[in-house]
Length: 268
Length: 291
Image (cartoon, rainbow over all chains, first blue to last red; front, side, top):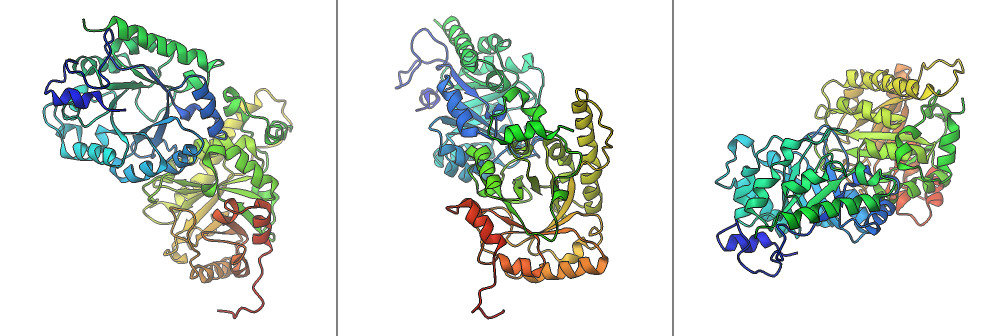
């Protein structure tokens, strides 16, 4: 999947889709296609292969894999060995979110395991105090390049309290395929969806129409419209999908909300 | 109490419904570990070498192939250079088997995770003796027993609301505490917790990955440990993990180990049953010179 943002950055102007690269946004929409990425954390871990097949058959586009190391966040979930085993049973796009203290240490393991997207936290690579909206921090830039060099797509994740502007320099430099906006504080279960965090999608979408903007944290049928209105196109949902009686219907609901917003929000 | 009814139904292969997964953990009135005799040889296959995408099937398979325990290698990427699995895997496996869930925490600050593992249904929680894991080993070992018991008690209270009282006392909820030694760590490190632990795990490889070769020097450590336990009048399980196969298991059994972890030797074998039996029946080769 070639990155639209790379072409936009090459034009020196990230703000509007003026050029016509191979996958420019079609007329009448303001963002890339909706992608539903259910989180396997809410699946039955005794039957992961079956659970993933079931959810992909019901319409999931990606599989969201939450890696937590018990240190960056106060919970320990799973690592590359689990991804490697799942890779043998699934052809789906593995959308890995690394909530770990030293993401650079895991690039090779996840590449070998078959991860497709490697999303690391801005806060794990540099102190937020050392980051700026106007210049790229070398550690962040280097890691994004290393991820791509290893054959994966590169994403950066933001905790609710981290401003969206801090990722602008890397998108402008064409280094990122995705930004993940968290709408809960990572690592804790059962939290309430944070409306003020989702609003971070808006400045990102306005500046980078071709960017994958992903939202994770308390997203479900009752919150999807706010998420879609803010500009996200990649939707992570855990219990809202895996815990549903009819996950296929939930996936369809999430998708249509994003597609409606994509048409309505299009810059004329 | 009819606590085992639902676990045996689930162990027979019925897939637990996602919504009721969390209530499927059943706290035992007596420890699963205490069902086994220390005079027997326990085989505890390590799921590190299993297919993580089919864990239910894999655990059911080793259960039916005759293992006594199931060894769960938890790694956090900081204490060891690998991240594997956490409490949610234990929670997912609890309904699948009534065998002992034998958890080895290769993590820093294990005290932060002990309650999670107890709630998830672990029967044994083993923490590392080295200071890079915890500098308060004695306290953590006791936490495994007390906090784990408290967590399990709370869970049992929540579950017993819909059950009639049978009059048994929730005295020992059966979570056993273990301590683990890396290959380079001497026995002296655990001298003052030997009377606190239910199990000692001797690593015969450097922890972090499966499929490594057995470190021969650890046989003497096992023998020394057995001697130390006899001197102190304690009798914890002596477990070994790392490169154990049917060909070399006899060495550690001979030295005093009674619980053997085997990862690739079981899960990469064509027959889980033959591998497990092979480890238990391991004998010194007749023609081999004694080293």
